[in-house]
Image (cartoon, rainbow, N blue to C red; front, side, top):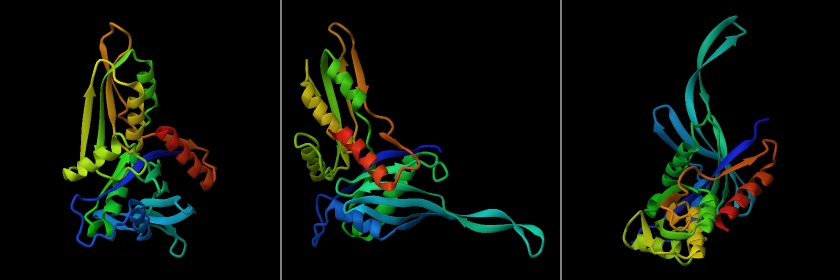
Length: 275
């Protein structure tokens, strides 16, 4: 059987700078869990309804849910009573599983072409479904579902460089639960106070500190943001631009693996990105 493929994403619940007068202080984890509990549905266009269902917890903070689309389609059937072939309208509901860790906001979205041509499209539907839930709407929360990219090649190029001349990292509003204290956490609150959705900071010098660059790069990747750098691979060589923009980190598991093993593989892949 074909192996199952999951892509890592980060779901963020970004509060506005001016919270509601009676803001209940709901945490991102609570917003996520309550949203799943509502099993939201959303008709994005005629005869195309997206839905979250099959929510189950494998541990108190982690589990999986199904996301898919419900459409009417023409089905060719044979009627044994009349002895004729017929065309009938019937519901179809292709879906895929999404594994989650609500304490971190990490998602492992299953790739299935019958649901959507690419995983990014499924991530966009999850974002819109969670954006429609009552707690999110009532508290003016902004939901984002962003790729967690693999920074390893980027890190190795930083380690092997003669000098790092420039480093740029993106950030979004508050939600990075395990973000670094040096950059992502303070910059996310700065973004919130500025009433912004996202931003970036660029630092340049003759030779930036590699350890700090790598630490911020890993945290930036883990929080679903992007980073880039300009390096000099060898003394006297021209400058080279590098980044870890691109596809989300992929996790491939045996199609017969149990749900506990699949969840463990996804959480381990996230730890590799973060640590």
